[in-house]
Image (cartoon, rainbow, N blue to C red; front, side):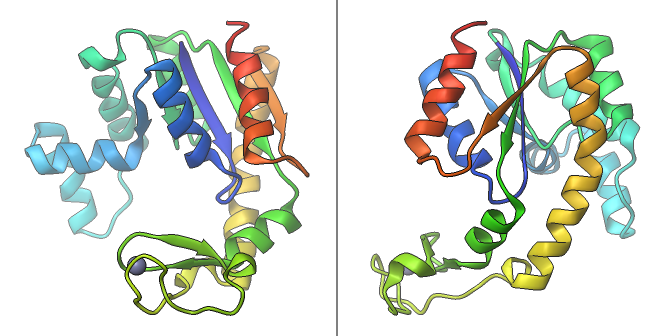
Length: 208
Ligand SMILES: [Zn+2]
C-alpha cells in the first residue's frame, strides 16, 4: 500500500501515521528523516543537500525528489510506505507520479480553530514528553522527570496561525490534484476521538 498522509501541523498526522506503520507494517517516511539519514551516511545526495543547507539555501525540488526516489527503492518499501511531508508541491507530486503508483491520499481535516487551540496548548519537556495545557490542571513540571515544561516558539498563538495559513495555502493545490485523480479521502477529525479517527482511516485502507 503506497500512501500519502496530508494534514495540518496539529491535526494528528504523526499519531496516525505511527499507528498505521505498526498495524500495516509500512515504513513511515518523512523528508526530514531522509535528509538526516543521508547526511549521517554522507551519501552523494546527502552531501549535495548539505551544500545548499550550509549556504542557508533551500534544497531545490529536483534534489528533494531524487532523495525520495532513492529512499523508495530501499527494501523496506517493497510492500509500500506512508509518505509524510512529501509531496509538498505540484511539481513534486507530478515527479512522484512518474515513478510510483500511489494507492491513496489520506487527508486529515480539522477546523483551524481546533488546531490553533491544540497546538498552542502543547507543552514540552526536554526528556521528550509532550502535554496539553488543558490536561495539566495548572501543573508546570513533567510527570516523568520533574523538569520544568516549556512551549516551543513556533507553537505560540500568532506563529501557529501563520504556519496554518502557509500550510493551507501550499496544500490546497495538492488536495485538488489528488481529488482530481480520485485518490483523495477526507477524514473528518472534528469532534472525534483519536480512536474514532483511526478507525475511519483503517476503514479506508481496508478497501484498498
Ligand atoms: Zn520530562
